[in-house]
Image (cartoon, rainbow, N blue to C red):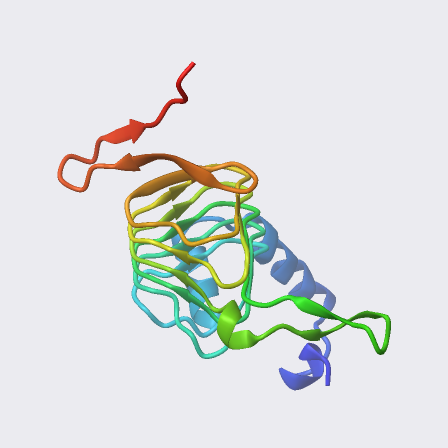
Length: 183
């Protein structure tokens, strides 16, 4: 059954025009919050920007969290409170697996091992990719275009492909400490 059939039939030309404008040009607090409610995320001040696709089953997004423009979140993903997810982020909780019998990728990987957890206060900047089975610790910062393939400790700064530890955030002062390589 198509989405249009499930929710009341074809859209008129005017409805489609309004819908298109709403989903592509309405990135503001009120519309992002309304979009979140329409998608079933009921916690206070959850915001979902235009173009974001969030398919996380019955999981909820924590209060005061934001999912940025054109981000993709799919599977058993838990998102804590006060989380910022920048534009074009990708968070997936399982992969396709290769079938030697069929000679192509088909089935899904172990969903329990694929669970992704984004703890409270995390900032995932633009273009970040979180792979299955990863936990991002409280108040960590993941730098732009990083690919995170393993767990990140709380108050860490990580970046790169694959992401590596670049520094940390002092819990008491908020100061960033950047690690440097010895020359």
